[in-house]
Structure formats: C-alpha cells, structure tokens
Length: 54
Image (cartoon, rainbow, N blue to C red; front, top):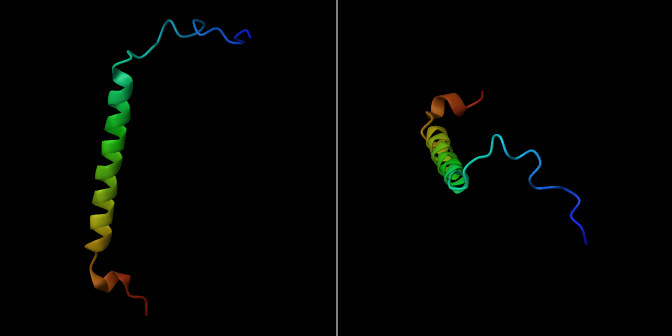
C-alpha cells in the first residue's frame, strides 16, 4: 500500500517545534478551565434583583 500524500511537502517553512504542541494544548485547557470558573462565579454571584422578571 502506497501513501497518497507526501509528509515532507508543505511542512518545511512554518513548522512548530514538537515541544510546543503539548504546551499549547495544555495551556488551552487550563485557560478554558479558568474562564469557565470565572463565568460560573459571575453567574452565581449575580444579585437577585436582576434575575426576577415581573
């Protein structure tokens, strides 16, 4: 079975170093967790006056 694509083609100029890929993925997960905690805390700490609809 022959490979259809050539892995060397198009990946020689702007390639990320292999070390940075897991670092970027881990940083994205950590930032998502922090952002969700901030959002949840802002929703839970909202005053009751604004949530009531008359």
